[in-house]
Length: 445
Image (cartoon, rainbow, N blue to C red; front, side, top):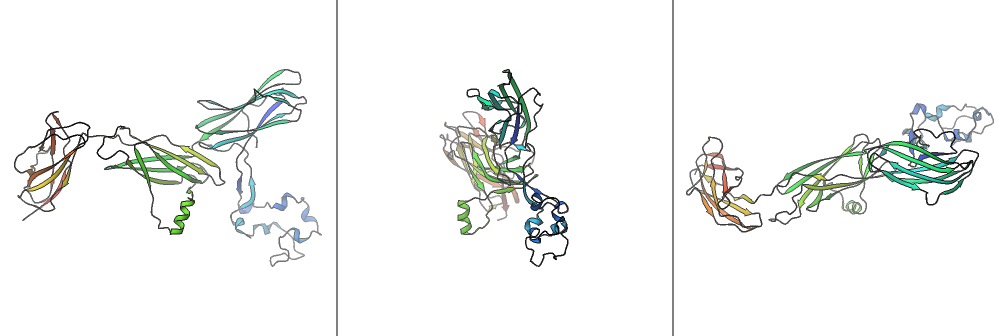
């Protein structure tokens, strides 16, 4: 297969480049109506069937079997439509087809090319300096340069062959630039450039969703196949940032102990079907910072994916995603939350609510005042502080916490809410966010 150059070489040049992409062949499937090719056709002459003395065992695998034609029968092409094996039902000819062009080239693959410098003139080309490089929109990558050890000569009718490889890491248009500097038969120094263009496409896309549930972060990744070939995922690994630990969550398939041991030695690839097939991965992320300590790095970077795959015939590919970002991490100076609420709350009878006030900074905070602030709406509060309306608390040391007992009373039956519990730092004159509403059930005695 020869790549087509963009602009042919001038006739006066002795040399010319021929480029062939090195990749695995493919199977050629044919419709049953058109499946007339038989391996015998590649070797037999056109007038083979016109010979009346032709032995039948040359035309049939088993001329003595029950399906063999009669001795005086005519051999026709209708026998080729009989399904004799599974391959016949798949419409595969049994032959491999070499690519006739560069074909589809995808990000993450290795572009390998066989390049031949041919001398089609009657003269010898001497002191040949050959260069091959890949040119993209951002850079030029040198693949071969014989400047320090030039090819001494390429005789008339001869050629000089070499192979270049390039890991494709950019999308968009690429140009394989091949140049030759040589002396022709008149000892004139000539320069030959040839260009072979191709476009690199994205084989797959990775779409992510991030959800935060309390102290846990869930990362969902959806991989979609954009190629015309099935992709077999050898590895989809999430590399978390320094402050995270990632665990993949998988469905329990209840496999046997033997299968579990086998899977530990050999992990079967995951199939993502051609033309838009998808597969979802789910990861649980936990912070590596000790509980109660402020994170030094408050970056929202979660990490990145390393993905490797193979196609139907084993062509490898590898991609690394960009950094994945989660929601910005917000650090509060204090954490106020409810430890305990009585399961039975009687109407108009006092009950205790136990709260925890935690200092999450590296300095001492306080003293504090705890009270219930009036709501935004004009509705009357149902759960109120019973007694002194402001509870005064001493300062709280760094990373320490205090337990608060709040005496309250409910004035209405049914499902009600404890709302508006607020903390005020007396020294810094700072009001912190109120405690989230807590539902309670108030019953009769």
